[in-house]
Image (cartoon, rainbow, N blue to C red; front, side, top):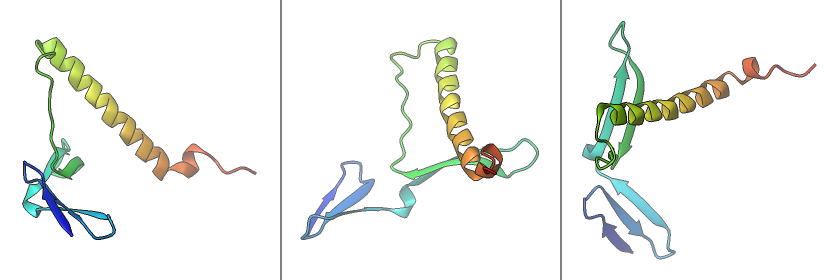
Length: 99
């Protein structure tokens, strides 16, 4: 059995004798970001993960307009993911059954 750790220490990879890899994380490395609704303290959405990293290319983001363009692009990605999930949950409404 072989063990490898990442330089950041986010996770450990263990390879068994058959070559199967298992990845383990420390529970303290779980990162959560969330959006709270306007009317109460309930979360509308969350982003969670181990070793989660959000990076911005600051070489290309030089103005408020650049920042808004990047944020709008990210909003579009999350809107598409939300719509995909809503369609999946409501398949019977979106695609009526055939007679």
